[in-house]
Length: 180
Image (tube, rainbow, N blue to C red):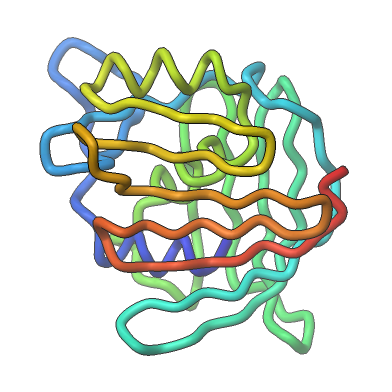
């Protein structure tokens, strides 16, 4: 999920919408996606994941420990030597992200949003994306987020690998773990 953190650095800023305290991200310049509650997760997980990412012609890799269930989500980011590089938490409708390595301006909301697009229930995602003017296609192993007829995010899911391509923002990351 470190890649997601790097992507947040280059994505649009996250704010709280007027009159709405729920955290959100801009999936497209005019599409405000409100983070879903934790109970929308498809399958709880408590596992290590290897994250490989590509952005701006550079490749990144790191390890994470992900704990996610109906009560919330937490991630611990570590380098190849096992040193802690950051912590992310999404509980009680709030996102917390801290890292001694990454800039404080990095918004954890984008990491949570990408995680939700990969691992949350399709009906909840479909409605949330519809609410922000986007559409959602879900086949057994492929998910797509569309703006009009253009695919802006594509997710390929397998039993041990999940690959997210954000065509609009220009990043790719691959998660490796035992997802099934």
